[in-house]
Length: 147
Image 1: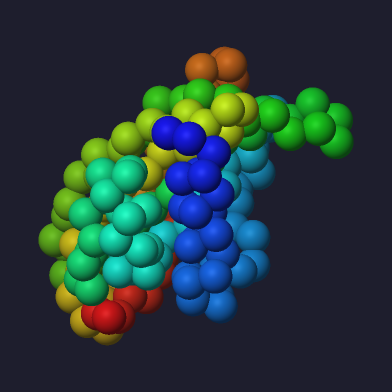
Image 2 (image 1 turned 30 degrees about the horizontal axis):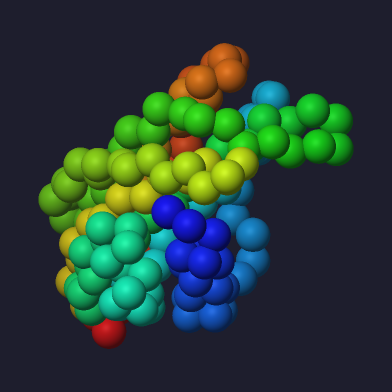
């Protein structure tokens, strides 16, 4: 992908995701940080969704994960194996299939998922950095509304 598409993708994320996502969301592990955001895929423009093969819909979400290696104050993007699932409050589970995107030095992983209106979802994510270190499992909950 070219730099213009990457800039469009991140611009859409910054401008269109809910205000609650503006706060940085990450998990701190020994040697790495795992940054994540989940949002309604309809917030992406049709062009950006097409460029990244993202299924865009008012009832589909997108999860974005980036892994950074820590070296003192410096953070460097690294590749990883990312697996996960999402389930609703009644226990219905969806596996997440992540796609790796590399743009210059940036490396991130995206996955689509379904949801219904006014639904709280529990994400369970397992990350293993290519640069080594211990596995990095984490989970989080987020509330979604159909757009």
